[in-house]
Image (cartoon, rainbow, N blue to C red; front, side, top):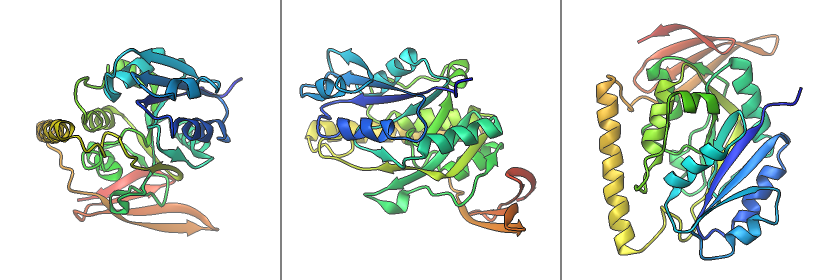
Length: 283
């Protein structure tokens, strides 16, 4: 039986300097059953022509519609059982998909969450020291930094889960990740963290977060404020907070195998984890 297929969705707007490297980091993965979907989002450069030199599916937008519309189109076109969203200027460690698919299948989670290494601002990176299965809303949001860091790129999603929950990116806004990732994490029954899969985030000239056009900056600021307001309203509705994060994981081993983990959160909440499954909590 063939291993499950992963559909990787890459929105591209004038990314000709990066698209080849992005595709190559996927094709060089140890996990091979991967479908690459490039959404050419109204690019005026050679992004599409370069992408077509590789075994990928290219979807063309005549005009720039933004990452949200591109990702929605990618989901609709995907034929894989799992979905990964990737930005054109970022890259992965070579065993990324192998580690992610192993973890999500083994634990029957709806979402696998990898490490997120922010090479521009390391202090906002999300790094894991162990594999954890998280099931309460508080633990899922704290461990993943959802709400504080809105990227969707360090998650592997079950496509059936996204369709069942009818999760769509909101089109027309520059900051579309925050509410999508937060809602997905809240709705998932289980999330598994994957310490040996790393998504490397970069920031390129002309990208959404690095555009110096004054009108663009004004819109991004307004969209950021809107996203924060929506996040706060969502958390308030569900009696949640984004203040707690994982600050320490203590491992207890038997014959070199980790049996129990003590997970300490920044708000002093403690979770005890047996073979990757939470079995005791202390508030």
